[in-house]
Image (cartoon, rainbow over all chains, first blue to last red; front, side):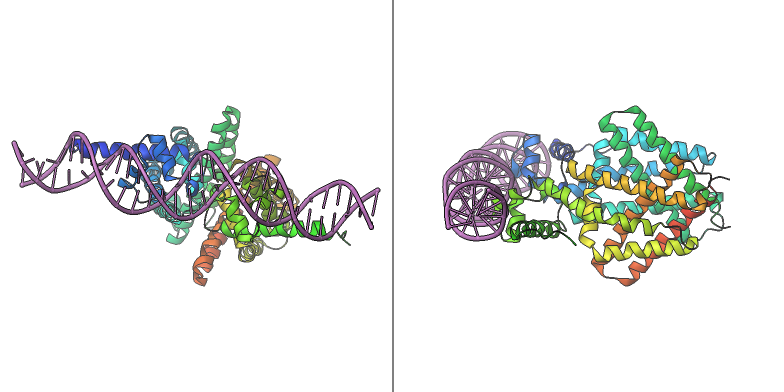
Length: 209
Length: 209
DNA sequence: AATTCCGGAGAACAGTTGTTAACTGCATGG
DNA sequence: CCATGCAGTTAACAACTGTTCTCCGGAATT
């Protein structure tokens, strides 16, 4: 089992996590580039100077949030695009997984969507890095698919990144429906996304014609 | 010809435009939610209170920037997806038009990409509105295409919005290459985007199979 | 048991922010 | 030509920001 770390480091990680959580909450209504360090510490209930024990700056905290939001997602990616079942089954499963993830971690998804093109360069780069890794992983998964027989590596990566972008777009759409709480709007997103993915799937099947 | 407006209103619009320009420049390195009103007036060389003569807040200014960035783009949209020429020619033309627009108005493109999911709700909504209009216009253009014979209105709109999203993604990719100034990277974006659009085009041709 | 280490607190710093009020000068309309 | 309107200025406000330095208490180390 895991190494038991002293109560000292345990407390440190605890407040560190509290800072991350508070920041994530505050970021639902603003961008990272306007997030103040005092704002975060105030929300946690610690002195402003305590912030420096954990992060160099709010940008640094943002990079940590990227890890938290995307780092644990690599496992899910595989299942999302795995080659089991008919094309329609696979699409339905992918959409369902995305919807579930957005419902489970809305703040994380919002953060990524917002800061992907946001005003803080290190965070932008951290997100791009992770998304590039996602692309590679999806590509590797696609390569296993019999449908990919005869595809060049380049084309596989093109398709993989197309899928990754679609995932983000879909996640963002689900996010908007969460705020309004309208179930029928959510169904609409499912419908549209399904048809989008179906069109891409069709294009994929005839790519080598 | 246009109505000659008094030197009074002319001067007002002049400083208003100066505020918009200065804001757009400042927004290359940060998000709108962290843009201060004093920051903008300082850049223009005018008193902070002068800001209120033109905008209620920086969010208000942001909405005006959305108009400026997207309002004049509707004409270009039509040509981008017009039904003239072979599929490959149309794709090449579209990619070229996007690349040209990004090179001509990089700050506007960056602003839209950044604030589309940014921290300022009114701006987000203004962008969504414009993009929805783009979707409708693209759909109308697609409807003229013989390839769209037999397509439902719903499917046409789905495809149109897929194209709109691809445009934004492509524009954002070109933007990244502008900063680094590497021509070969720009060629790479052209290559990948072309293949993406080709795959979508193929899916489109076999949609009704 | 004595000592070092270190996460966090406290106070103070100069600088910034949005917003209000009362003003000035000049183009405008009667 | 004179009175009104209005874009822009000046001054001041309380509140906020990031950062530094000094200190404290308790866990960790020896």
